[in-house]
Image: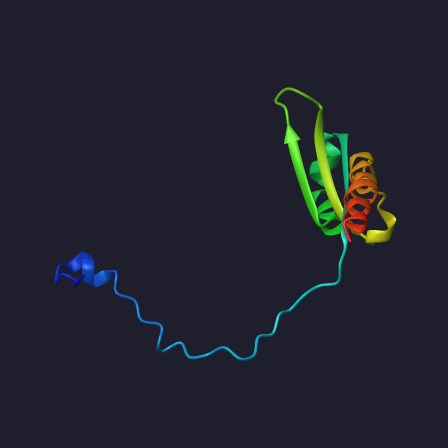
Length: 110
């Protein structure tokens, strides 16, 4: 099979020879953390007045305003230690099934 000389065929040509060989890579990482999520109704005037403090105190903040209302929905997330988080109920169930059936059956197959 030969390559044509039209523009599309020439644009599909790729050469990686100039990239060289990657022998060393450095990743910058942050320590493991969890996010605590809080959702609450807040007063519109107070929230607008303190918006800069809210954004400084939390990693993430979302405001939901419903026209004609004096309250708004504020959703915030802040960093917490992973050990301070408890597993959700469904994750406990999955872990139990994994330990009870998958690991047990793997051991009996030996």
